[in-house]
Image 1 (tube, rainbow, N blue to C red):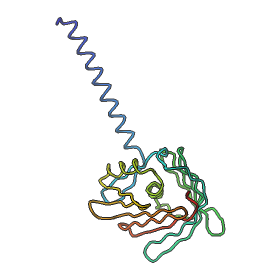
Image 2 (cartoon, rainbow, N blue to C red; image 1 turned 90 degrees about the horizontal axis):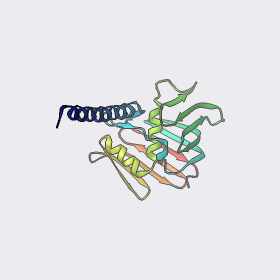
Image 3 (cartoon, one colour; image 1 turned 120 degrees about the horizontal axis):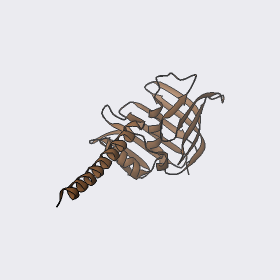
Image 4 (cartoon, rainbow, N blue to C red; image 1 turned 90 degrees about the vertical axis):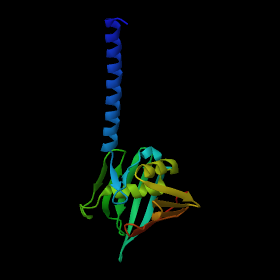
Length: 192
């Protein structure tokens, strides 16, 4: 092979390698820039894209939550589909207490009532654990070292063999218990 052909071959291989390297670097950057939460102290759960929702939801939901001895009762208007998640949180009198939105990029949360320390990514993660499709959710959990078992309308999330989250769903009620973090909540609506 003459010198001219060798240099063309080298240039072609260099261009292909550079393209592959840049493509991999940009994919890694995109993944790192996506919102995430820690489901355990070491399990970084990257939020799923909105397209992975099981089915669109547009409903008024009654939320009852408990953390230790504290209880909270709220009303939430939820509009979630392949484009994103929009939530409006209302108190029992109907006054707006906060608004959350997620479209696959950043999570936005505005509230004059809730403390600034509330991380809205946790709200989106819990919503996705309840309402996103099993294959995508299973893969995302696997990516962060957790596993999902889904049987008889009950989703169980494990770290090794330890149950950390349990979600029970039926047509008008969803109950989430986070055994690791010590909180639970129930959503009541028509989820058909």
